[in-house]
Length: 185
Image (tube, rainbow, N blue to C red):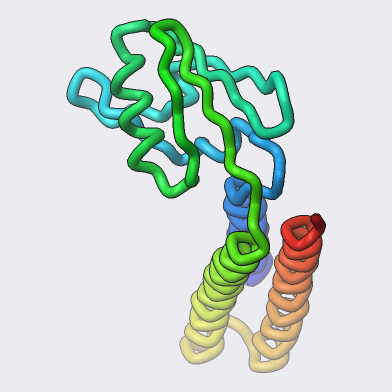
């Protein structure tokens, strides 16, 4: 019973770390990157659809991204979604493709991004701690019900704490790397 609880907790903690990686990738550093638009939904025939499913991306220059819709009728919807997004880009529509030129990052904007990344890292840490708390509650219930001994429960909690510490350190390392990347001019 305990190995299943610990295994499930470690899997969920690893997913929280992966989610943090994806969140960090969506924060721009200096290059235009299609992952900036990974969470962007476009209203397509009345249905919110991920932009990646509606268009292809090309990166001809460091700060420029060309978005070519598979269906030209979606061009205006995509442009509208880009304008309303919080990416800070100004899309230009030429009738065939949308050219997105990312503005140069100012020091103020970089610091704002560092705050955003810090907030996302804290959300990931909280997620890991919630997984730990849930697994700990399950172990304590097993001890209380007499299904396992107190020593086994303590050992499981120790293992859980070590796993929690490891995953939080991974998140902190990701945060440190992303902050350095953002502040690099």
